Length: 418
Image 1 (cartoon, rainbow, N blue to C red):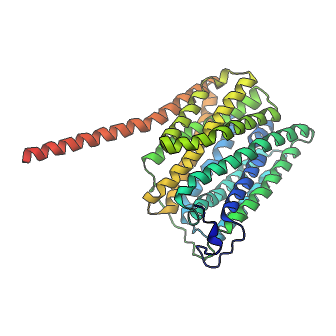
Image 2: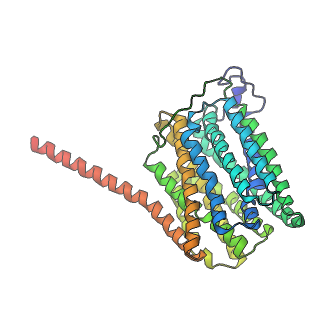
Image 3: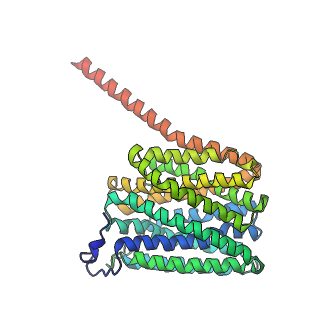
């Protein structure tokens, strides 16, 4: 269970915790989702409205996760899990957030925006990788599915209400473009700073030396981790296409795009509790696989659809599948930790593979848009997703057959000798 009584018996001497642990975790989730909805929900839309090309839109989806991957590969795993490290990375992240918001006011903002976004990505991975390690000191492993699911429900509620409100606000104040986006982004800056401070209170105050050296990433990766990274490539490939299709082809308003967030939130709120029970009954991997296949099949006809109500239904389905995918992925990650001696290295490698998949997926989309029409891109992506998903099962069955054959051969040899 959540160790809310740790205020009287903290895992580190001298740790002062005023707020209940569960309150702290859920309030941080609320603040981070306020940041997501006010800063990032319409950031890609802003980039498109600033005149970015299709390739620039793909790059904007690719650079942040690629820099996240570089941070995880060579920096994050070498830093001790302490309050000082967590706070410094949070301050760098905050500086990058503010710079991203303010550079939108420059005459040619896209290069600057991408530069500061990349700096933010390096810092956010440090806090992102350290936060699970901090939480593991306070939370029983059996509680993580409930925490992740509750956090997701909090996020859905905030994203649903906030996405609609911000979409309405941006359209109402479109006359002051792009300042209307800047104001929304500044709200996100304040929220992420407050959330970071809440989690920093849980980290150890112990001072540990930082000794950076050359490290070899991927040591803690297994076949399942690589496979989940492949699935992330397929999922990430659609994000730039949705922005291009919704903003540049269909010319949807911010409010219409906000309704995608609203329908996703409503459907996820209704179905995510059922998905959590399905994970307990049928197993994590089956639910994870259902979400991956569901997303793949839904994008097949996307490039031919122009009816807004049908786009709304598909986006709702994609949203709930993505929510289930996120909860299942996080739970799988936490369940795999006991099998690894170097906990932070495993967290870093897992996030490294996932972010590398996100970056590679967006880059591949940039190449596809130069070669194929949008409807062709959606078909190729759907086929790639199915191929990635079934590659693991095929490899697993082949390994099982090989092991079975080896066992039968050994048994036959023993019978010959006897």
